[in-house]
Length: 442
Image (cartoon, rainbow, N blue to C red; front, top):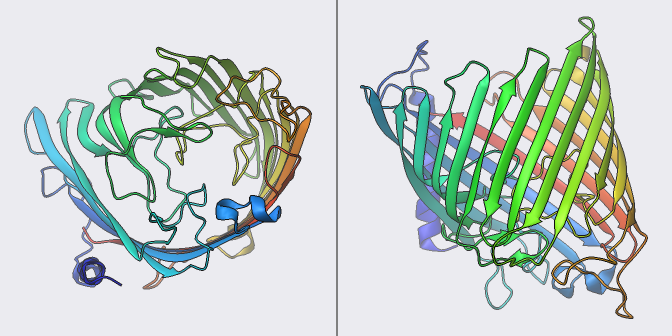
């Protein structure tokens, strides 16, 4: 390991150790730059393997990817200075450390994305992310400029790998009206989970890099009542697409033990400006119904893409609030229809608080690339557009969060996925083990 990596880890570990000396005094209301500050350190241990059942078609030609790595993620958020307009800063320092991978197992430059890979195809021993943002608050509006982590249905940072994704630009949020949260921003670069560069060009999951100068978004979430929330957002990836989103979620308790669940998500995406991703006019939606009875929750979802192209989104981001977008598959191919059944179990009801279990199975049919544009077209070996494509995915997840003691909030999470499909996707088996230990220092 490089000396700089050792030093960085030592500094962050020292910060983490300081938490044992911190007075845990709480205040009901934090005001001021120092009084409202927080400092947290997250240790994340991440093991991931992906077995491509199609052999030579796997990432890097190896057919099997495997990586074990550790991350230390330190974040500082100040309060705001006193006055009508308060100012503050947010900052972060992150390091990812390779523990084990190699021999063609690092996933190359694919969606595996656990560690950065150099020009010779070797995974780096360590990499870092350092950034920050200045912020200002006036009345009920907060504006941030710098490295930011938006979380909306149209632009959202991703955190499913070793280090989180981030964006650089300006964002704002407003909570002036009770029950309504407005958000917006204009971002001119992104940083992928395996990149130390905070100014990467934009990339989408299905089309790859796109030479767009910025992405902008605006929208809000409104609580109609204590049972129902409605969301409406719009975004533009300049010279690529305009996306609109509408969603709603509903939870209605019939008794202390029984509740009904429902939800709906809808996106429309059309080409924009220079049409860097070709011409398209897509709409995709998903609907959910479910019931929660005591410790058990069962839900059924249906999803349809009515467009002629893949419904695309920013690479490795969480900017896809569709019910059937799960661990590996998004079920978002042109004309694809999919169903999914999901079961959740909360073991707190059985005397084991912190332990939960989830299982789901989704199946998609009728994917048809006959009318896809040149960017999203997929063809068979004979050069013909793929039609009548099918796939399924089965996921199992177990998570335990320590409830008390010195290791309180430490979590252990196992994620298992199996996918099988016809020609347009790979057959995969995935296993992930994620151990996280969050420390609150300030």
